Image 1 (cartoon, rainbow, N blue to C red):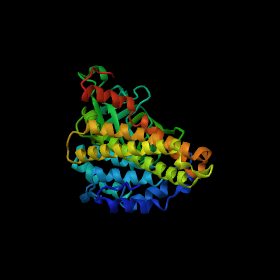
Image 2 (cartoon, rainbow, N blue to C red):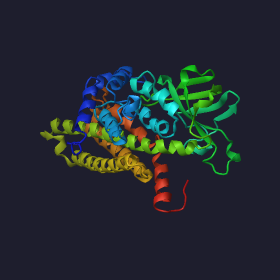
Image 3 (tube, rainbow, N blue to C red):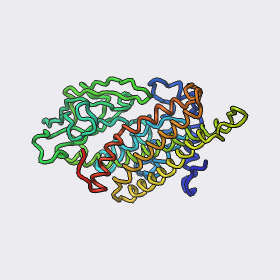
Image 4 (cartoon, helix red, strand yellow):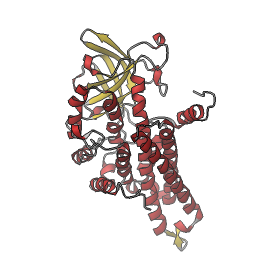
Length: 384
């Protein structure tokens, strides 16, 4: 199965795969249930892939979002788990687009060289879920900065990140004319933040996720990114990038699962012939392949629009929706193809099956995407 595009990114794909070749299935299985892939992250950083979106003047790769999506796709297609590093890419947009010149000079070179990690994105809260405007974590201005109180959940990689990008209320919800007002974004060093408590959450796949508690955490004045009260608009920029990048990971997962399933179905013989000749095995794989290719086209369309600075919310959301559903179809078809061996850890099917299932509910639930498309694209009455 040839998944390369017109050749423009062949060298990029090849370079990522060369890094991933040193981290095979045994490496990823050895990290279960929740160890962080330090060696893998270090290798990606040395090669410049984790700093790909950082402009060259700050020591980064100056890559487009399209190229960033290819990096994550190839990690997933190699059998790796891109969730260990993807946040550094989609968080980057808020800092690049809305951070001050001082912010960029202070943080970007260090992130590019790997001496600082920006992996933690503090947005979701237990009482708000997908209704981001209802978050209650509060940042109050003080004479010497800000004081933060509240709780975040599903803040992945917080235990392995030096910096956190935090969304908090600076004006209470009931004092704002619109729900989207009164939210602000902060970037701060988690290594020096008394009152910050991080607790890991065990999950069905290795995602290094946590809940984070803020008890009178003090931040300096310059932790604020952009203007106070405009944070919701700022993170929307990152959310479009996030959806595109997650779509690319799903496409990579689907590639991995289909390639393994096709190889197994071609070589496994039962009743005197390869099981891949049976339509009950062959057709689900073919359908999953078609769905992945269609999602891939929408992903590239969305990424190209983002790179051109055009509106791309509909395309980004559709890419994530279609790719997550296609990768899940590939996962089910691959598991069925392998039969009992699909449940055996050494085949890596069950691991990818667990990993790719996440993306129908996170980082945005597919039902929320359907509600967005229904209201904002089709013009139907608001659902939620």
